[in-house]
Image (cartoon, helix red, strand yellow):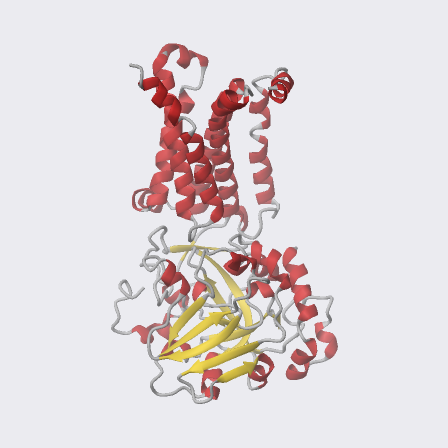
Length: 202
Length: 307
């Protein structure tokens, strides 16, 4: 456990607000790249993709917090809320770029949400994250009590929907989105045995 | 800038003398180090064509750095990064099937019999983006007439090179390699259908399908198969790679049609590449705006069925 202790010690002085300061910087960087030609000849799709991919990475990072603590002894729990809220921040930007820069046409946006499964699925994932973002504060944790933990299990379907959305939007079965889906399934599978242990004794 | 680097590499390995002799150009015009700043600095000497659009072409950098060529990776910038190592000389095209003079035709031989034209075409990708591309090429019809199409032939099948050592994307089984495409014979014989060997009057960069590719401007881009090594005249409708991979999404015809949606996105509008972060979408035109020339090919067909 020595490396884990070292990591925990090193992280102890990092204040919880640090991620809120660092986290949005990539968004600013992506937009800057998009405005200055750094995202290639088609910056809208590139920006949309970068934001969505980072959101998915943050969602997956959020899901590693518990296994890291349980199996490696590394404690990042203090930063989990920031990771989750940043994931929501990037999903929202991703959606905003799709709405405002990519599709642009409102009638088409509605048609796409209803008619195109990968967009329906992406929107569903976003919708699941709204109550999570709204209740990611100490007041809500207190008020909701045990219900808060149950509510925040919505992260699991949200991350799955995000990964499936990525797999479905590319042409053919591409490796990278499948790796994200595999990571999401793996991280969720780590939670299964524990659930079973809990339910067996009762 | 990767596009420029690769283009230069391509010039290095393309037998320049061949191109220049054939086109009878001043040697200096296509100096190795400099890509033309404007099309006016003739390289291949492609002749202007009445089939060209008046629209301003995309920049060479746009065209060479934003490509779908899955043989070199699925990212739009992968072909520019990975296609530099493709050997395009020597290059031969096997022409077989229902033709009078089948055989393996050397690229130089194929090009010696044709006059290159500049065809500035609209290019519409099935992914709902578009470009204006100044191709240099010749009508496929000229080649087919030269090899002699037999009366029983109804379709033309095309195949891309399969060489995983030089085409890293072919090491994955994403698609059923080699890439294949096909046209109905009347589509293949249409004067708008060209085999392109150049771009901006210079030899085609590898990432754009060097040394010889098909361009069918009224169809979605994936029909315009790249780096062709085989052309077969057939009686049966040939297999086409994306159609095999997902027949619901990619029909054999794949004519540009704003009224028939791709199952995952609308085809009603498109975004012209090069407009930056705030580019507006524009309406997609039936047959990509070539309806006057090609609509007759599909008279009586239900294009929502035969998409």
